[in-house]
Length: 108
Image (cartoon, rainbow, N blue to C red; front, side, top):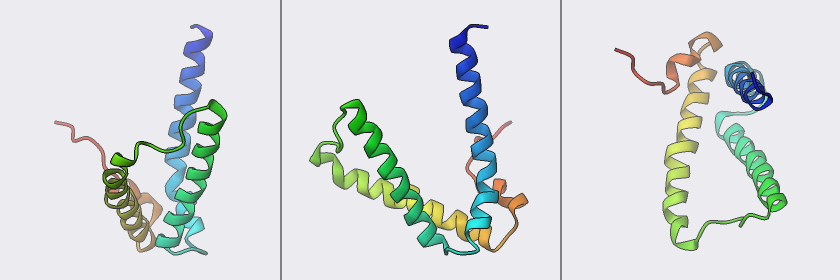
């Protein structure tokens, strides 16, 4: 196995571990924050991180202004409301039932 392939497998394993740990970490965090606040804090931290990475790589920080209304609508309805709904469900449920609320492909 090449070094590049090993690196990709390591990154995939890290992604799976972080994704798998998310429900537990969300449940622990929700002892202090409600779902709306947690979603806002989560995306604020991600935005700061991605803006810093984009600045470091010399990429433009914002998309063209003509795309902003559509991106804002997608962000609110497709991401924020989805996370608030999932976090609210997790608040009222257990960590073991969280995967049932996550979108995943249907298998025949």
